[in-house]
Length: 559
Image 1 (cartoon, one colour):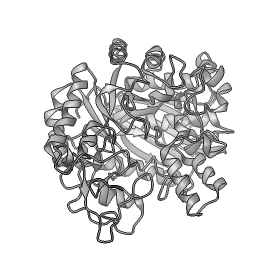
Image 2 (cartoon, helix red, strand yellow):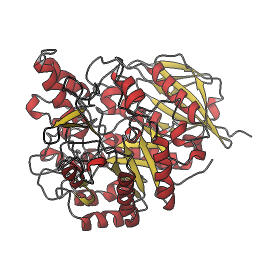
Image 3 (cartoon, helix red, strand yellow):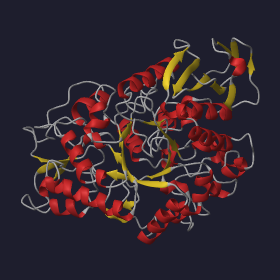
Image 4 (tube, one colour):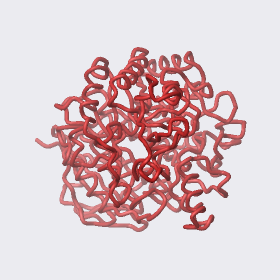
């Protein structure tokens, strides 16, 4: 197994708009990140992932790029970025950028030129189609954010494709000029010293020939079978790796939308030389049946075990995964998978133990290290996320839901939950900014913040620091072969991991009551590496786990 530098690393995702505001305009910025680099180094982070910082009109908070080689003025200047990169590297950390290559902004020069005429050189940078026989969109494709995926351009009498908002036209990767533009932009940043890219919705870049209608199935299945995994996708990814990524000491992390465990190897098997790793959506969406806001499903631990196992088996010794249980597109981890009320601290810590002991690169989202929770937005006027707003407007208009119920759904699963300002202290807006922030701060910042946890040895923050340090010392955390115990137990997740003679055992209680786990190992010779409680009750054959208790034991090395 190639032990590349990123495999044992911990990635920390920064959502720059919400991280730290250095100039008090209500918007986080690059200098704000620079101010917190010592904090991130002390947290034992290895790799920083920045959500998009490129020039953008912000229809989708930077995921609509109008210039791939310039900095959004709200975030600062190129000099600020260069300083951020230098200071990150000075502290022994690496930095990767969010590459949004499936689509750009409708305010990008390419699209502005493409609209001018059908014979404009940039016209073929995008997907244009004539109306259907009835004058409507060319097919029945729906946008990820609601409504048709086609927008009519009255000047040319044609529709253009946008799988996201209408201000995010999809790029035509079949055109070699488009691929060259994206590759040149990647080289621009890699030549500066950037260490790689997280690749936004990269499985969507190849469209199916003829743009066939989507079948009448759930949207997730449409993503897999119609939008993702297109006919030329792997050709494009090999070209990207060959011409760009492989030429640098850099790596590629794919957002695995539309990828399942059966086809993951086509993306990340080492011998295919396409992508270095991906994070999948099966865990992130395991409480979502079909569509983010509707049909919520109760958390099911056995289902989560099955997901981890099938993915582990699918890529074992052939490829590499990143473990993500939260990011900017999903509600807060502890609010979804833990108990953010009675057992807020314990469940926050336990979830990290589980995530940090799964094989793969650990991916942490900002604020999870202090247990940030979902927010309750009081009215639709406080909602900022375009996905949530489109859901609300569409369903109020067709009278499917009441305003109250639609807002409740948004508060449960909406993306604004993860995008509230980082909570640094108990001062105004959690110390994020003296100015009204672009998105309302979670009012619980007086109880959940970095300053409050900084010097508390039992805090979630210091638990993260300690666990990430220990994780670097034991290869079994990252690379170990799994032996599942208590597999059919709906409350306990217990497993042993072995690597190079090293053995650890992980015991997790996903419930509000004490549970007993029967163990066949010689517990009396084990060393407790991690425990999110002060005590551990055990005898030679069993361990009592308190509500949301998580424990990692170091067992005797195998001969």
